Image 1: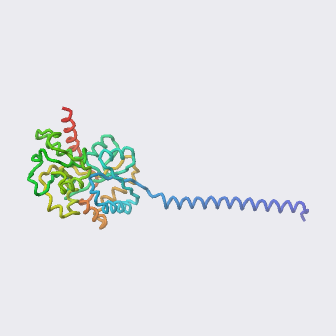
Image 2: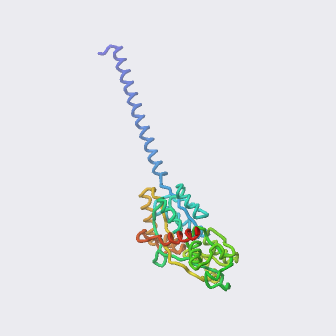
Length: 308
């Protein structure tokens, strides 16, 4: 039989041991609980987010289509997409270089500029009539007497953006090729910074004519069929490589792959197909065997002509 003092000491040690063991188990349980809570929180709230930049190569007035496009990418690329609009192509370039935009739907001219700086790569290419080509259309109202670009001397002319291929560079290029002074040919040039706005400027009589992207013109007519009765195409220049989807080179490869797959499978999905139809696009394809050298040559030709 243990002496009373020894027994008390033994019991006390056992009690302390139990308390310490309980504290250790409690601490482990608390840490495990915290870990599980953090894991669940991260799982619930760590969905990838990415910002899509949009310029004048989309019909911004059709906000429903753009929101549906955002929804489609969220569903099929498993990524949260924010939309960011840029008034001009030069602003979009700055958004991409300062990384406030991750991928974008841009004019071929913008891609040429960014590609030279090694900031971006091609993500996906749209097709129209099963071709990766589009044109610059010169449009006027039907009652106007003009029959071509070179008859528009001393008129008020709408261009979408100073760096737009179809909306600015192509008509300038054609005028210079014919020996005209591009800075003195038109009475006035109005930059609308949006192909849809250029079309509306013609319809309203604010300008006499405009140069617009053939894809956006078709999308506009699809949405506003009455406009087809009021407008006419008096000239067409092309074909040029179509405006692409581009993405920053330093974006995670898994995100690139998910976005590309969502785009190239879009026409197979009823919801995606409806969005494509609203954008006047057949489908998207992987970027292979496509060159934007033609647009680069147009840009360099105009630039070199300015310096003479």
